[in-house]
Length: 513
Image (cartoon, rainbow, N blue to C red; front, side):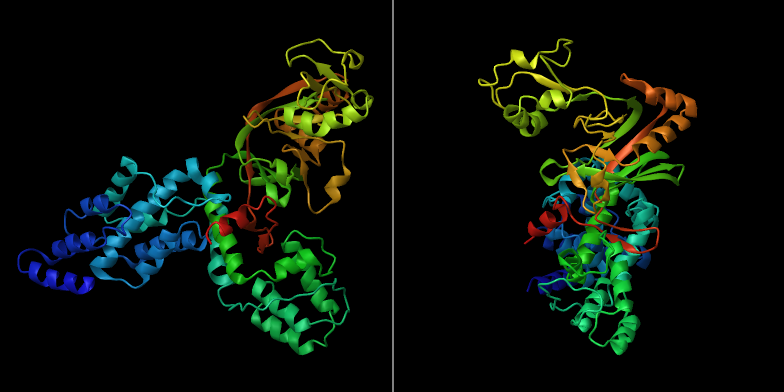
């Protein structure tokens, strides 16, 4: 009935004024409740002309709207995308303009709200009022008939964007994923009798093999998990950050059973996350928390990589940006209060010699040079909450920071450092720290940074051999980014997935139910 009233009104109004003006006024009034910014949208139609005549501009707009909808971060965005698919003419034009205002406002808000939105949260039903510069930019693009360039710039400015985007829309789209899953209670080992057809189907859904490869494997299948299929599973495990042993256990099974729809959601969510760290400097360190890896880039070239250990789920490594400005050799460790109370004092209360054996000093305050004797404390009268002192661990081989601390000032007191606990780097899952980032190849990284700051190899050796704590300032501060990407396109041109160790992907999904 509402659409019929609009048509009758337009026919009557067309006798009195230009058809576009009548349609625009009527449609804006009709969609008043659904438009994100009705008043601003109406002002942009003061000249009564249609704006979205370019199919390419429409495509760019709808692509970015679709990516946001696939990430499932806002129900209104999803509804708008499907609404636009069935429209044309003035009706489409008005909704497209309103959508453009929304997307540009969203884009400009990512720097301040993105961490809240992309890591277990949702985009609010209503975004803030658009900045005046946003509206000026849209108005200028409309007046200069340059919506193609303007909508093209809605994409994240990241090298990863185009590769991940292409995989999302074309890599998984051909596969219609049913609800059938591959369920096994026991490990599946090479050459074992099993449901090979189910394994092949799940590999196809995951994008590991295509339709032709699946047919070939099915033709040669003899119900044995044979060597050709084991090789494919090993590649599958590599692509998901798993141990490449060819054994199908719970972790491999989890990724095999993931639906194509869920993979697309994760990829779309990670595309939005790219917006948080799209404007990196030429020299930077990048730590991807879910992949347990750090990389050092110079002028677009990868010059160093290392495994890292990140914060355990209950003490997460935060997502932040800072600068690396110095190397501290043989650092002391000022123990944070939480770690002191939860990890160290319980051991000290049960074993009086623990603090001394681990080279901890008890001090009144961080600025004090006084060291309190263990024997001067009435251990029967203190507990972890009432302990009134600070703990500092002296430098040395047992120091929790190892031989190097890479100074990165930030409000979270999180930094990169060495560690005496080397065995943990051999594990696939490396979320064991209390928030800081332990670097496996800390020595090599320190040498590279000193070389970049024009120190000689002998300079490095001299500082390394000094028994006391010393600090070396770098010539150039290096940007450091901790990021959380659970999906990206790797150097082998394959889509990579990693375990959602802090449940950010999972929480984003659960809050949409």
